[in-house]
Length: 290
Ligand SMILES: Nc1nc(=O)c2c([nH]1)NC[C@@H]1CN(c3ccc(C(=O)N[C@@H](CCC(=O)O)C(=O)O)cc3)C=[N+]21
Ligand SMILES: [Mg+2]
Image (tube, rainbow, N blue to C red; front, side, top):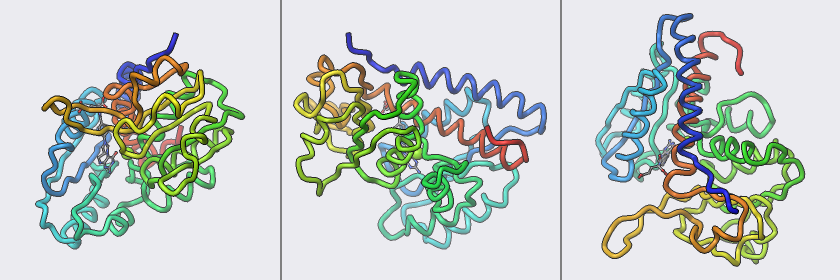
Protein backbone atom coordinates (compact mmCIF):
# COMPACT_ATOMS: atom_id res chain seq x y z
CA UNK A 1 0.00 0.00 0.00
CA UNK A 2 1.45 3.32 -1.11
CA UNK A 3 1.30 6.22 1.34
CA UNK A 4 -0.01 9.49 -0.05
CA UNK A 5 1.87 12.04 2.05
CA UNK A 6 -0.68 14.55 3.30
CA UNK A 7 1.21 17.86 3.24
CA UNK A 8 -1.92 19.78 4.07
CA UNK A 9 -2.56 17.86 7.31
CA UNK A 10 1.08 18.10 8.38
CA UNK A 11 1.06 21.83 7.58
CA UNK A 12 -2.05 22.22 9.78
CA UNK A 13 -0.16 20.54 12.59
CA UNK A 14 2.89 22.78 12.19
CA UNK A 15 0.84 25.97 12.02
CA UNK A 16 -1.00 24.85 15.19
CA UNK A 17 2.32 24.43 16.98
CA UNK A 18 3.59 27.78 15.71
CA UNK A 19 0.31 29.40 16.90
CA UNK A 20 0.88 27.97 20.35
CA UNK A 21 4.46 29.29 20.50
CA UNK A 22 3.34 32.63 19.06
CA UNK A 23 0.87 33.10 21.91
CA UNK A 24 3.70 32.53 24.40
CA UNK A 25 5.86 34.95 22.42
CA UNK A 26 3.13 37.59 22.57
CA UNK A 27 2.78 37.22 26.33
CA UNK A 28 6.52 37.64 26.79
CA UNK A 29 7.12 40.47 24.36
CA UNK A 30 3.72 42.19 24.00
CA UNK A 31 4.03 42.13 20.21
CA UNK A 32 3.27 39.62 17.49
CA UNK A 33 5.98 38.30 15.16
CA UNK A 34 5.62 40.29 11.93
CA UNK A 35 6.12 39.08 8.36
CA UNK A 36 6.50 41.54 5.47
CA UNK A 37 5.95 40.23 1.95
CA UNK A 38 7.10 42.37 -0.97
CA UNK A 39 5.53 41.79 -4.38
CA UNK A 40 6.68 43.46 -7.57
CA UNK A 41 4.35 43.61 -10.55
CA UNK A 42 1.32 41.52 -11.38
CA UNK A 43 1.61 37.75 -11.38
CA UNK A 44 -1.52 35.65 -11.42
CA UNK A 45 0.30 32.57 -10.09
CA UNK A 46 1.41 34.46 -6.99
CA UNK A 47 -2.16 35.44 -6.07
CA UNK A 48 -2.98 31.99 -4.65
CA UNK A 49 0.34 31.88 -2.86
CA UNK A 50 -0.24 35.27 -1.21
CA UNK A 51 -3.79 34.36 -0.21
CA UNK A 52 -2.56 31.12 1.40
CA UNK A 53 0.20 32.98 3.23
CA UNK A 54 -2.22 35.55 4.63
CA UNK A 55 -4.62 32.83 5.81
CA UNK A 56 -1.86 30.81 7.46
CA UNK A 57 -0.40 33.92 9.11
CA UNK A 58 -3.82 34.61 10.62
CA UNK A 59 -4.05 31.03 11.90
CA UNK A 60 -0.57 31.29 13.41
CA UNK A 61 -1.33 34.64 15.05
CA UNK A 62 1.38 36.43 13.09
CA UNK A 63 1.07 39.96 11.79
CA UNK A 64 1.46 39.92 8.02
CA UNK A 65 1.92 42.98 5.83
CA UNK A 66 1.97 43.04 2.03
CA UNK A 67 3.87 45.69 0.08
CA UNK A 68 3.01 45.99 -3.60
CA UNK A 69 5.44 47.73 -5.98
CA UNK A 70 4.65 48.30 -9.64
CA UNK A 71 6.39 46.23 -12.33
CA UNK A 72 8.53 49.24 -13.31
CA UNK A 73 9.83 49.90 -9.78
CA UNK A 74 13.54 50.71 -9.69
CA UNK A 75 16.28 48.80 -7.88
CA UNK A 76 16.68 51.85 -5.63
CA UNK A 77 12.98 51.95 -4.69
CA UNK A 78 13.03 48.27 -3.83
CA UNK A 79 16.23 48.52 -1.79
CA UNK A 80 14.88 51.60 0.02
CA UNK A 81 11.77 49.64 1.00
CA UNK A 82 13.93 46.74 2.23
CA UNK A 83 16.00 49.21 4.22
CA UNK A 84 12.87 50.53 5.93
CA UNK A 85 11.73 46.96 6.70
CA UNK A 86 15.18 46.06 8.05
CA UNK A 87 14.86 48.96 10.53
CA UNK A 88 11.20 48.34 11.42
CA UNK A 89 10.98 46.72 14.86
CA UNK A 90 7.51 45.37 14.09
CA UNK A 91 8.87 43.37 11.13
CA UNK A 92 10.81 40.20 11.97
CA UNK A 93 10.65 38.46 8.62
CA UNK A 94 11.05 39.84 5.09
CA UNK A 95 10.17 37.89 1.96
CA UNK A 96 10.60 39.40 -1.50
CA UNK A 97 8.59 37.32 -3.92
CA UNK A 98 10.74 35.88 -6.70
CA UNK A 99 11.27 35.89 -9.62
CA UNK A 100 11.74 39.65 -10.02
CA UNK A 101 11.12 41.52 -13.28
CA UNK A 102 14.18 41.22 -15.55
CA UNK A 103 15.48 44.77 -14.91
CA UNK A 104 15.96 44.11 -11.18
CA UNK A 105 18.91 42.26 -9.61
CA UNK A 106 17.79 39.35 -7.42
CA UNK A 107 21.23 38.93 -5.91
CA UNK A 108 21.41 42.57 -4.81
CA UNK A 109 17.91 42.43 -3.35
CA UNK A 110 18.62 39.23 -1.43
CA UNK A 111 21.84 40.71 -0.04
CA UNK A 112 19.99 43.86 1.03
CA UNK A 113 17.78 41.87 3.43
CA UNK A 114 19.10 41.66 6.97
CA UNK A 115 20.22 38.02 7.46
CA UNK A 116 18.28 37.80 10.74
CA UNK A 117 15.05 38.75 8.90
CA UNK A 118 15.75 36.57 5.87
CA UNK A 119 12.90 34.06 6.35
CA UNK A 120 13.52 32.61 2.86
CA UNK A 121 17.08 31.68 3.88
CA UNK A 122 18.44 32.99 0.58
CA UNK A 123 21.00 35.50 1.94
CA UNK A 124 24.61 34.32 1.42
CA UNK A 125 25.15 34.40 5.19
CA UNK A 126 22.32 31.92 5.73
CA UNK A 127 23.39 29.83 2.72
CA UNK A 128 26.91 29.63 4.16
CA UNK A 129 25.62 28.73 7.60
CA UNK A 130 23.47 25.94 6.15
CA UNK A 131 26.38 24.49 4.19
CA UNK A 132 28.64 24.72 7.26
CA UNK A 133 26.02 23.02 9.45
CA UNK A 134 25.49 26.09 11.65
CA UNK A 135 22.19 27.49 12.95
CA UNK A 136 20.53 29.39 10.13
CA UNK A 137 17.26 30.45 8.60
CA UNK A 138 16.68 27.62 6.11
CA UNK A 139 14.72 27.87 2.83
CA UNK A 140 11.07 26.97 3.42
CA UNK A 141 10.47 24.47 0.64
CA UNK A 142 13.46 22.20 1.42
CA UNK A 143 12.68 22.51 5.13
CA UNK A 144 9.11 21.36 4.48
CA UNK A 145 10.39 18.43 2.42
CA UNK A 146 12.74 17.38 5.23
CA UNK A 147 9.93 17.47 7.80
CA UNK A 148 7.84 15.16 5.60
CA UNK A 149 10.78 12.82 4.98
CA UNK A 150 11.72 12.59 8.66
CA UNK A 151 8.12 11.87 9.61
CA UNK A 152 8.12 8.97 7.15
CA UNK A 153 11.68 7.72 7.67
CA UNK A 154 12.92 8.73 11.12
CA UNK A 155 16.42 7.51 10.23
CA UNK A 156 17.54 8.88 6.90
CA UNK A 157 21.12 7.79 7.53
CA UNK A 158 22.74 6.01 4.58
CA UNK A 159 19.79 6.43 2.25
CA UNK A 160 20.59 7.37 -1.32
CA UNK A 161 18.81 10.64 -2.02
CA UNK A 162 18.68 11.98 -5.57
CA UNK A 163 17.77 15.64 -5.98
CA UNK A 164 16.50 16.49 -9.43
CA UNK A 165 17.30 20.18 -9.97
CA UNK A 166 19.99 22.54 -8.70
CA UNK A 167 18.25 25.84 -8.05
CA UNK A 168 19.35 28.11 -5.20
CA UNK A 169 15.77 28.03 -3.91
CA UNK A 170 15.24 24.27 -3.72
CA UNK A 171 17.82 21.90 -5.21
CA UNK A 172 21.00 23.19 -3.56
CA UNK A 173 19.61 23.74 -0.04
CA UNK A 174 17.72 20.42 -0.29
CA UNK A 175 20.94 18.57 -1.11
CA UNK A 176 22.64 20.20 1.88
CA UNK A 177 19.85 19.33 4.30
CA UNK A 178 19.86 15.70 3.12
CA UNK A 179 23.63 15.57 3.58
CA UNK A 180 23.19 16.99 7.08
CA UNK A 181 20.79 14.09 7.75
CA UNK A 182 23.52 11.63 6.68
CA UNK A 183 22.04 10.70 3.33
CA UNK A 184 24.24 9.90 0.36
CA UNK A 185 23.29 12.68 -2.01
CA UNK A 186 23.34 12.89 -5.79
CA UNK A 187 22.26 16.07 -7.56
CA UNK A 188 21.13 15.62 -11.16
CA UNK A 189 20.25 18.41 -13.60
CA UNK A 190 19.82 19.39 -17.23
CA UNK A 191 23.43 18.55 -18.14
CA UNK A 192 23.50 15.21 -16.32
CA UNK A 193 24.03 12.09 -18.43
CA UNK A 194 21.77 9.10 -17.79
CA UNK A 195 19.38 11.06 -15.57
CA UNK A 196 16.74 8.36 -15.67
CA UNK A 197 19.01 5.53 -14.53
CA UNK A 198 20.49 7.70 -11.73
CA UNK A 199 16.99 8.53 -10.50
CA UNK A 200 16.18 4.83 -10.53
CA UNK A 201 18.89 4.24 -7.90
CA UNK A 202 17.24 6.65 -5.43
CA UNK A 203 15.75 5.54 -2.12
CA UNK A 204 14.51 9.13 -1.88
CA UNK A 205 13.78 11.14 -5.01
CA UNK A 206 13.15 14.88 -4.74
CA UNK A 207 11.93 16.39 -8.01
CA UNK A 208 12.40 20.17 -8.31
CA UNK A 209 12.86 21.13 -11.94
CA UNK A 210 9.54 22.72 -12.90
CA UNK A 211 8.89 20.32 -15.79
CA UNK A 212 5.36 18.95 -15.74
CA UNK A 213 5.16 15.14 -15.37
CA UNK A 214 8.86 14.61 -16.24
CA UNK A 215 9.39 11.72 -13.81
CA UNK A 216 7.76 8.55 -15.14
CA UNK A 217 7.31 5.12 -13.66
CA UNK A 218 10.57 3.92 -15.29
CA UNK A 219 12.51 6.65 -13.37
CA UNK A 220 11.77 5.31 -9.88
CA UNK A 221 13.04 2.38 -7.86
CA UNK A 222 10.36 0.09 -6.40
CA UNK A 223 9.44 1.26 -2.86
CA UNK A 224 11.23 4.62 -3.23
CA UNK A 225 9.94 7.74 -1.42
CA UNK A 226 9.09 10.50 -3.88
CA UNK A 227 8.82 14.19 -2.98
CA UNK A 228 7.36 16.30 -5.77
CA UNK A 229 8.28 19.99 -5.46
CA UNK A 230 6.92 20.97 -8.88
CA UNK A 231 3.86 23.21 -9.01
CA UNK A 232 3.16 23.52 -12.73
CA UNK A 233 0.03 25.05 -14.16
CA UNK A 234 -1.00 23.20 -17.32
CA UNK A 235 -4.00 23.21 -19.62
CA UNK A 236 -5.96 19.95 -19.55
CA UNK A 237 -8.96 19.87 -21.88
CA UNK A 238 -9.12 23.66 -21.80
CA UNK A 239 -8.94 23.91 -18.01
CA UNK A 240 -5.98 25.06 -15.88
CA UNK A 241 -4.75 22.30 -13.65
CA UNK A 242 -1.81 22.00 -11.22
CA UNK A 243 0.57 19.12 -11.82
CA UNK A 244 3.92 18.24 -10.31
CA UNK A 245 7.24 17.25 -11.88
CA UNK A 246 6.22 13.64 -11.26
CA UNK A 247 3.66 11.68 -13.25
CA UNK A 248 1.82 10.85 -10.04
CA UNK A 249 -0.74 8.42 -11.48
CA UNK A 250 1.76 6.09 -13.13
CA UNK A 251 4.43 6.35 -10.40
CA UNK A 252 2.06 5.89 -7.46
CA UNK A 253 1.69 2.12 -7.27
CA UNK A 254 5.43 1.47 -7.65
CA UNK A 255 6.68 3.59 -4.73
CA UNK A 256 6.24 3.36 -0.95
CA UNK A 257 5.20 7.00 -0.48
CA UNK A 258 4.65 10.08 -2.61
CA UNK A 259 3.51 13.69 -2.19
CA UNK A 260 0.52 14.85 -4.24
CA UNK A 261 0.26 18.17 -6.11
CA UNK A 262 -1.58 20.14 -4.86
CA UNK A 263 -1.68 19.26 -1.16
CA UNK A 264 1.92 18.11 -0.73
CA UNK A 265 4.98 20.35 -0.65
CA UNK A 266 3.08 23.64 -1.27
CA UNK A 267 1.25 23.81 2.08
CA UNK A 268 4.43 22.71 3.88
CA UNK A 269 6.39 25.59 2.32
CA UNK A 270 3.93 28.07 3.78
CA UNK A 271 3.85 26.35 7.18
CA UNK A 272 7.66 26.56 7.28
CA UNK A 273 7.50 30.25 6.39
CA UNK A 274 5.38 30.77 9.52
CA UNK A 275 7.84 28.71 11.54
CA UNK A 276 10.79 30.71 10.19
CA UNK A 277 9.07 34.01 10.99
CA UNK A 278 8.59 32.94 14.60
CA UNK A 279 12.19 31.69 14.78
CA UNK A 280 13.48 34.99 13.36
CA UNK A 281 11.40 36.97 15.86
CA UNK A 282 12.61 34.81 18.77
CA UNK A 283 16.20 35.32 17.68
CA UNK A 284 15.80 39.08 17.27
CA UNK A 285 14.28 39.38 20.72
CA UNK A 286 17.12 37.42 22.25
CA UNK A 287 15.49 34.09 22.95
CA UNK A 288 17.53 31.00 22.24
CA UNK A 289 17.14 29.36 18.87
CA UNK A 290 15.26 26.09 18.96
N1 LIG B 1 10.92 34.60 -2.19
C1 LIG B 1 10.10 33.60 -2.54
N2 LIG B 1 9.92 32.55 -1.70
C2 LIG B 1 9.08 31.53 -2.03
O1 LIG B 1 8.93 30.57 -1.26
C3 LIG B 1 8.36 31.60 -3.28
C4 LIG B 1 8.59 32.74 -4.09
N3 LIG B 1 9.46 33.69 -3.71
N4 LIG B 1 7.94 32.88 -5.26
C5 LIG B 1 6.88 31.97 -5.66
C6 LIG B 1 7.17 30.58 -5.16
C7 LIG B 1 5.97 29.68 -5.22
N5 LIG B 1 5.71 29.27 -3.86
C8 LIG B 1 4.59 28.53 -3.47
C9 LIG B 1 4.39 28.14 -2.17
C10 LIG B 1 3.24 27.46 -1.79
C11 LIG B 1 2.27 27.15 -2.72
C12 LIG B 1 1.03 26.44 -2.27
O2 LIG B 1 0.56 26.62 -1.19
N6 LIG B 1 0.45 25.57 -3.08
C13 LIG B 1 -0.74 24.86 -2.70
C14 LIG B 1 -1.99 25.38 -3.35
C15 LIG B 1 -1.84 25.64 -4.81
C16 LIG B 1 -3.12 26.04 -5.51
O3 LIG B 1 -4.20 25.57 -5.15
O4 LIG B 1 -2.98 26.82 -6.47
C17 LIG B 1 -0.53 23.37 -2.98
O5 LIG B 1 0.45 23.03 -3.65
O6 LIG B 1 -1.31 22.57 -2.50
C18 LIG B 1 2.46 27.53 -4.03
C19 LIG B 1 3.62 28.20 -4.40
C20 LIG B 1 6.63 29.86 -3.04
N7 LIG B 1 7.49 30.63 -3.72
MG1 LIG C 1 10.83 29.53 0.20
